[in-house]
Image (tube, rainbow, N blue to C red; front, side, top):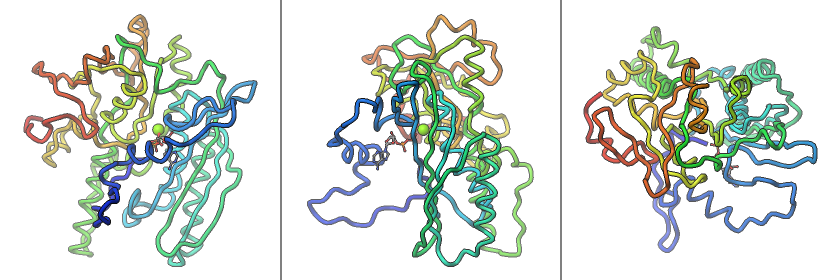
Length: 359
Ligand code: ADP
Ligand code: MG
């Protein structure tokens, strides 16, 4: 899960490994390498958007996410109702990324005594609203006190047939890379909210200047999960070969697909869908618009690959963009800029990103 507000690590003892050296995915790899599997029903464990468990009739998809105050959300500008809604949606998004149908969630919270019951009512109003919108049953959870702050952990179950499940690892060289919706707006929404928070801290009587940024702020505070894509693709007669949801930024998610599928990629910068106003806003903030899409995260759109032969079926579908293609693994992982330069893709965006001043 994407962590955008993590503080710099303090010193660690000699001979020990600072977490910053491993990074999130390095740490997960290190911790889960010794994990054994005891049940043949476990078709997929760690390493995808959800675990896949065979029931004999179909599969259960299982995923979990943890949200922590001060790391994943800031209560100075996040309404509790939005927070509850988003906490459910990010889990539903992981089921959508497996091409499954979300069914049940459990919700666990740890709350400090600084919160009155009324704000938790609001949190649950958001949770229940998301359950209603996505037709998901809230079936349990756990409640605890916390020393300070709020922590929300949601687990989700989804279903699919064995054939329907789409993994991160199914792409082959020479397939099309596609993305739903547009990218980068959630990140720009976060920057607008952070800017207004700073203004407010300096001068508490100032009213926040949030008008005109509704789309970006909405994408940040109240994202939606693309559960509609399953049926859209079914109707088009397309079954993606791999799929992932975009929680950490396009670059990081493309690299996950490349790694798990053992393919390379060519991503065409000019094909990346970015909302026009988000583009302008990024430039105002002195950020290359492409960076908001590649590294921003929290868009909760879907990234998937399809065979070249499906191009005719998808090329005119509104809300889906073909942004590049996969290659042989030895061809590397590159973004092609509008002036034809190949730049290596990295989890942070691309190599040399900081040197580029052009919009
Ligand atoms: P996503 O962004 O789709 O929610 P993550 O990047 O959080 O997925 O996690 C990647 C994979 O690692 C998932 O399969 C997840 O279940 C697994 N994972 C994450 N943290 C842990 C952990 N502490 N122990 C075991 N597995 C983990
Ligand atoms: Mg995911």
